[in-house]
Image (tube, rainbow, N blue to C red):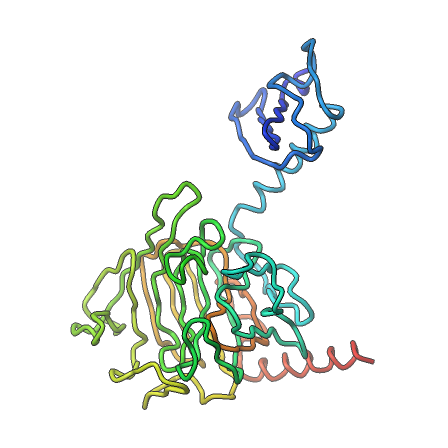
Amino acid sequence: MTPQDRAFGLRLNSGCAEVLIHTFESVGKAMRKIFPDPTGRQTCTWLPVIGRRGFRAPCRPMALSLWLAVMVAHALADSEPFTPQEPIRLFNGRDLDGFYTWLLDTKREDPRQVFTVSNGMIRISGEGLGYLATKKEYLNYRLVAEFKWGKTNWHWGDRIGKARDSGIFLHAIGPDGNSHDGRGAFMAAIECNIFQGATGDLLLIRGNAADGSLIAPRLSAEVVEQPDADGWFTWRKGGQRKNLERVGRLNWFAKDSHWNDRLDMRGPRDAERPYGEWNRIECVCDGDHVQILLNEKLVNEAFALFPARGKILLQCEGSEIFFRRVELLPMNKRTAGDTPADHRKHHQQLAGSLQRNCE
């Protein structure tokens, strides 16, 4: 048996295959990853791949172990959060490549077509509770999204006659549907609210890890001393430092103190544009620090975030909403597409591309 042969082992048991990879001469560490049994049979016991009598396998063991080793490498690479060095168009304007869907009632199936793409826009119908999630995790980025509200509110999320509601979940972690909010409709995360009159609020969404342990988000912020009517703080630059953990909300700085949950709610100082108009929201995630800009205005800020890396989710919570741009920009420089003139050019190019695709 060669050292390379000794570097791999294979075990098939109860419908799973487990690969144990040893860095034989250098690091000497072991890594493990669980994969579904590709053969559908469980006929192997724990044995080295080569060199033991009585080894039984449903296929050539060395080939299978090498295949699984490659899968481990890919899985480990995919599990590492990605930091963009150049602009990344999370939404390509054509389809949902790079995303997957999750709904409370149907999981990764979408029989009602809640998440669709048309005319260069993502449409989230609102008919359900769930999200559109990136397949990858990210950290240290500037997320730029452009959104506008659709017409329809649904009974999902109790939105009939009430304010239109969605959100962008930052640093979402844990298994799908692990949130306490929405009875498992979402993931533990820091939510940037997209909610009429409250767009730019930051919410702590707690949940459970795969082992059942609590995922308890937290943040620290400079705030107005007096809490709002619900007992939560409002951001103010240079204000008193307060911490939130497990649950809570950090209001954007000019949120109407008389905000109430009614359709097309607007406060006197709202940074969000009126219903039917496009809005630009930017989430600047720099380590455990986040800033929220709405239509070029800084509206919220927090520090000492946990989690500080993870997936990005576009929420479905009972209201129809459209996204025409979802893009990650690197932290270290301003890039094309970052000014109002660049925004217009971006949309002109997108419209031209759509026209050519239809010809």
